[in-house]
Amino acid sequence: MAAGKRSKKKPKKRSSRAFPWKLWSSRFVFGYLLAAIFVLSLPQPHKITTRSRWDTNKTRREFAAWGKSLSFLGLEASADEMDAFLWPLAQGTGKVVRILRAPFKPFMRVTGFFQSWRMFSTPNTSTVAWVVVELDRGDGAFEPIYESRSSTYDWRSFQLSHDRMRKFISKAVRGYETADFVRLGRWFAQEAAHDFPEAEAVRVVARYAKLEGPEAWMAGAPLEVEDRKAKVFKLEKFRP
Amino acid sequence: MKGLLRGFDALVQQREDGRVLAFLRMSFGFLCAWIIIGMLVHGVVDSVWLGSGAGGLTPVRRGMWLTRELPLTPTTVRLLVAVCLGSSLLFAAGLGAWFFGVVTAVSFYALRSLNPPVTGGYDALLLNVILFLIVSDCTRTWSLDCWLRKRRWRSDELVAAWPRHLVTFQLVILYVATGLKKASIVWTPTGGYYALFYVYMDPTWRRMESVDFMHWAMPVLRFGTALTWHWEHFAFVLLILGWFRFTRERDGLVHRLVNRWDLRWPWLAVGFAMHVGVWLTTNVGPFSSITLAMYPALFGPVELEKVGVRLKEWLRRPRSESSDVRSQSAAGS
Image (cartoon, rainbow over all chains, first blue to last red; front, side):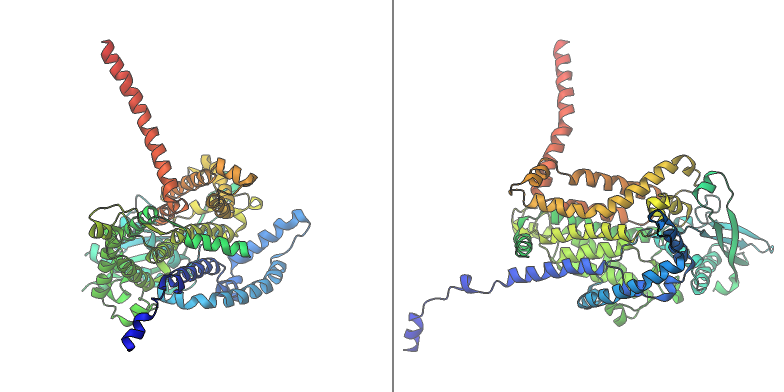
């Protein structure tokens, strides 16, 4: 009897009545990812609302230059005035962006999805810095064996020219904290201890050159070079 | 608003053959492998990704869910490198649908998170595009999956086009965000368009030892600075042009103009020239290759096929003409 009742039922039209899961999941994933790309590319809140980032010499110089450049509108402003005008704006923007980013944070944490595009956004306009490595072969005198981009002092230059090594070297020589500079020095000492078994020590130097601007450079003004950090590492500690 | 939703839905439901997505899959799989191979060849894997206790530059960080669980010994890190290299090549070959894409993305993300200070923007860009490809049907054609299913490399099955549009949107946002964040005065007309002068003065990124070339190349550098800055700001135009091409059946003056001249090509030609310039003069890793590999996503497979046909005709023409001349001269003699 039950079987007879079942056989009288009309077959369900699944295709026409079924919920279009595939379409809706595509809509959701596409929409979510479009929003993620856009929202996460907005300035990161901690970068625009951290006071120590605003108080750097580089930022102050940029403010001064921008303030001066407004003179053609009759609105010349000092670095302090620019700061006073922009700081509350940055705080407000930071608050809004923090709220907008919230739905995407778990996705970022799980997948590594990230948007931060800053190709040469603020080039160094006051100084340039590079690293010099000097070796003491046992006679007490240090001679250079490596200097960034030098074809004369080119010890391990193939390895050190890799972009990730360049990035770390730049961070270590320019950084305000000395920890990275010491780490870089230790790494040089470790490699030198291996490559020069007779040598006594290496000295790692952060060399700076002051930039006077393109006009002065074109006119032939020499670069003022100065060693700002230097550290000696005895190689015996790095040998087995 | 309704029009916007209709447009969004049209993009979601658009289907096309999977050749462009397959090309992106192959490119990004190989580029990921290329990054790892480049690091192995330069001998920097241990320095960058092993902790300072094991000969690396810095202590490793455990910022990612996988690296928090793994014992980060030199053996496990090297194993992670091998997994990333192998899976990226298998992903490029199109095996296992999304599976090797996920393995590539997770292992690359894990490696990247070991030493955040030495990651580049290109790492994030590569990973983002691989994530878009994972949710696409990118192994439908030109893949080992296609061969295993159909015993042939090519399939005309249709796939959703929206993952390709995600790559396009990513490219546009990359350029616009980069342009807007170039906030230093030296990028602007009031700063004299001198940004590239300062970039080349810094020995961190430039390839050459001497900067004497800037004495004669200064006008070129200033022009390059201006071009880069304005071109990046106006990258959003690509989205508008793409939308007009997508809705080309509609009538109207702008549609007729955009249908007549495809302005995406000159825009991309400028981009190509700039990336080649960046690649020749600076070492910023594979940033230019990764960005250029995204360019085909701006076009549908049919559009690219037409370009291919035209290119083939153009390449054949001089040969056939010269062979005609040769055959005539042979007949004459």
